Structures are given as C-alpha cells and as structure tokens.
Image (cartoon, rainbow over all chains, first blue to last red; front, side):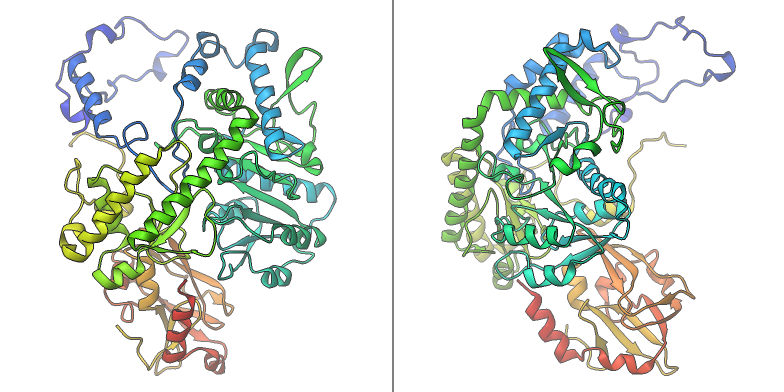
Length: 483
Length: 129
C-alpha cells in the first residue's frame, strides 16, 4: 500500500507542519501556485509505521547473504558511515572557500593518491557520479586525446562480447561505432579476431577484467600490445576490481584509463539504485584531459583544480565534487584497510568464490568454466538441470529467496545459457557459505523430487512472482489521484 | 519446435521466407526467442528504408535483453508488421508466424548465401557454451 493510499484529508503531521503564513520572499505572486501540492495527509504514527514496514520488506546486505554477481554486495562497515556523517562534513557548503574546507579537501586528495597507488595510474579524478559516468569520462578522454593530436580518423571502439553491457553503450554515447569481438572457449579474448579488428580506425579497446565470465584475462599483455601498436588506447572497466585489489595494477598492464566503482570495491552502500561513485584513473597521456574539479595540494594547503589548471579537461560531470558523501565513506574504508588490508580483500574474495564454486560443483551444478580458477565470482549453468527437471536458473533463484538468501545474478552474462553469476565477496564467513550450499543442495533435490514446488517459489515473501513483462511495458512509476 | 525447412536462416538468428512476388519476409527464430525470453517491445524499420546486408535495422526487446535484428541481404523495406506494436509476445508464441519486416532484395541471388534449416541447427548448437 502506498503512503498516498493511507492519506486522509485534513490529517496532519503537526510537529512537522509548515507555517501557513510563511511566504517565500521575492517570488512574484503570479508565479506562486494556488492549488495545494499533492502530498499525502497522514499522522506521524501512520507515517512511521508505513516506512518501518517498508524497511522490513527490504532484502538487504544487513539482513541476508547477497551473492549478486557483478555487484560486489559486501558488508558496509558502520565506521565509514559514522565518520562521513561528522557534522563538520555534513555542514560544509560546496561553495565555501577552499580555506574553510581544508579537511574535506585533504580527504579527497588522499583518496586520489590511494587510488593512484592501488591502480598504478598517474592521475585520478573522483568526480564521476557512478560507474556509467566513469566509463563516459574514460572514453571522452580517449576521444579528447585523439582529437588533440588531430587524429580524427579513429572512429571505432573495440569491445569483447564478455564485457559489461554498459561498455558498448558508453562508446556510442561518445560518438564511436562499436566493433564486437568474440570470446574463445576458455573465456578469453579471441586474439586472432582482435588482430583482424584493429587498424587506423581503432580509437581504443574497452576490456572488463576479470571479465563478466568470472575469469582473469590470461593474454592481457598480448591484448595491450596489439591495441597500442595499432595506435589505440586501452580502457579498463574496473567493475570487477575486487578480485585484484592490491595484487595486480591496471597501470602495470599498460592500461591508459580505468574507472573504479567505489560503491562496490570500496564498500559504500548501494543496491537501491544509488548513489555511486565512479572515479577514473589515467595514465600519463590522458592527464591533461581529466574531468574537473580535482583536489590539488600546494605545500600544506589544498585547493580545487579547475579549467584554469587543466585547460584541456573534458569538463565537469556534476555540479560539485561528485557524490561527496560516498567518496568520504570510500576514503574511510581505504584508510581502515590500508595497503595490507586491500591485499586481503582480493585474497578472501577469490578464496570465497573458489570455495563456493567447488562446493556447488559437488552438489551437481554445472560450472561454466571448470578448468579456470574463479576470480571473485563464477558462473553456474542450470542448463543441464533444466533439461533434466524443467527447473530453470530463474526457478532456482526464486526458491533461494524462500531459504533466506538473495538470489545470484540471473541470465547475465548472456554468453552462458541458464546462468547464475555468483559473487560471495570477502566479508562472508565459511558458515554462511556452507548454509548457502546446503540451500542449493535442497533446491537440487526438490528440482528432482518435487519440481512444481520450485516452480511456484517464492512462498514466504510479501510478493510472489512479479509480472516482468507488465512491469517493463507499463512503466507506471508516478502516483496520481483517481480522477 | 523444429525450424521449418522451407525457410532460410542467418548466423544472427533471423529466418527468411521468399514470397511469391519475390519479396522476402524476415523474423527471428525459435532459438532466438527462447534465448531472449518474454518480449516487451519490437521496433521495426521504416518502409522505404534501403538496407545493406548485415545492417542493424530492427530491435527486439525482452525482459532480459535488447537485441538487434539484421538485414539478411541488401534491399528496400516494403512492409513492417504493425501487429507486433501492441503485442510483441506474438514472437514468443509463434516465432515463424510473427514476421517483423519485408524486404525487396537488391539481388535475389544473394539469398543463396543463407543457411538451410539443417545448417542453422548445427550453427545454433555450436554457439551454445
């Protein structure tokens, strides 16, 4: 039930009611609205109950194991939250002079330095507001680089088919055409196809590594050489950075630009549609083109660097400093971990994924790339299960909800039939993962003994199976009163 | 459901039917609709548009993904199936009946380069990982 449907004319939340005689100053009377805004009229208690109930319906990392592949749903430490909520940060006005915001600027500068160090890049800009905007910034910088050299015949971006779906979209948004190249049976880029694809028209390559198939690209050095020899630049989609954090540096692999999803790897709360932070790191060639503002340091003083300092910058991506609150949380997380802790993130993210993969294989599930070590995530294909029992990956996912687990990512990547993409992250204990394996075993047995039970799941949640088709066709997101 | 033997097929999972007047009718295969799942939207090419072989010309969108449909051979669009506008699910129910668009091929001999049903079935099987 919507809060609007609880509305009762005249009922007021008295403590928070606006003063009726308060008039906004300076706005001409002709421009003021005369009808009342369509806000729900509910009592304070009804409002509290409504939102408390909603929060209880939420399936979140704070309540359940959440192995949603590609999303890195790790625990969000409370310390990051409480330190980012210090009143000195919250009350800081973005237009305040640099000298009154030295603490915040110092945190942003340190975060830039930490990210440079952990990725091996020459510069970092924190302003992109999400992963997709980080990708946009990265490809816009590649375009600015070629344009600045007068090299305007480069019109193509190469994208392997195991890349994130956002990669080709980003290339198109930046005015490029996309050339897709296939993956070989091992899950690596097909090098012959790459050699055939590059040429004087190649602006760059976008690579997700580890790929969406959950494997680390073995031929990364060959790929780097082929693209650079053709005059293209290399873009690293860092969405899966959790697997290699502190272990391998994209800068060392020869990449020219990387975006990082700080909301994933650096553990800021996400999953409800935002807010994110998609910081970009660049190699030397792209330093002049970074999006502004950057946090600069001169002596012991910090200041914002703007277009005066970077006249070739691709510009601003947000009004101020990206999602400042998210960046602060990521900064605290990075400082709590330290360099040693980041190594342990990659160690345990990878160990957990490989343990879970081995245990699920024992139950009977088909591993998509059994000959490869998993990175931080891996793919189970339910194709054989579906052929034998009629139970699809979606049925398994829905039944998991009844057993108290968030479902893995389903039907992505599309290269693998009936796939479940599973990412436990480093923050889960062996006991939790064992409980998940036990649930997957129960579902396996149910699929063979009582398949209709699985097909009807979930039974224990506030809603059963939703009508995906209706939801996609009738995007009805706004409430309006009955006429 | 097997793939009808009177149709031709492409590697990108379109089926092609040659009509009596020499135009060709194009849709997506049973295999393609099964992979994509429940359809929610179909965008057909405009009538009169000239297409090159392999050109992206239509979009089918399902609850899982959006996929491009490609021109099997070069030609001019002579019709689009307006019935799919409000009912894209017809592709799921009857993939070989729910056509998407019709082309007048530039060169009828180009159709000889397409696959027959047996070759297409082998191709679809080889693509499954």
